[in-house]
Image (cartoon, rainbow, N blue to C red):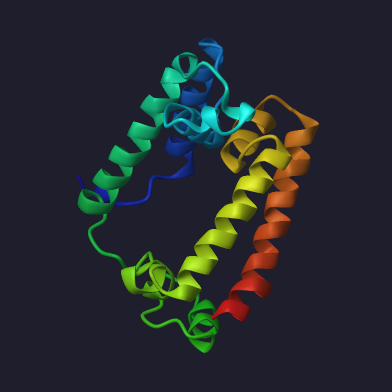
Length: 185
């Protein structure tokens, strides 16, 4: 039973992702989270505002099951499968995060400085979410898909544009981690 409460090793998680991907390929679907958000936007009437969303969302019903699975799985994992919130971090990482203003580093998965209700509803938090959302939305469309779509589907089918997109994602993550986040905190 203790196995359930620990992070699963790559030799279990990797094959589970591969099986999921094979099922998507078998049923003629592409895997990617941005497709799911497009479907949800279409259902809620975005097609009335933009021609981009003029799609038959019923052909993407599988995407709704994926989103439901993300929400339900996230809820189950965060409420029942995490016995404690401590994270084993390198002492240098703890010191660097403390130096830029984070408190309780390593004691919780989601730091209050980013994820608390007070932070989200502050002007700074709202602007961070707004600007981040715009960048992510623009980047997803510009790259022709999201990180999961390119990194899992695109790379597994040996697509060069996906390789370039994933390299770009990593470069963007490094820039955000080393330069943008320290400026914000």
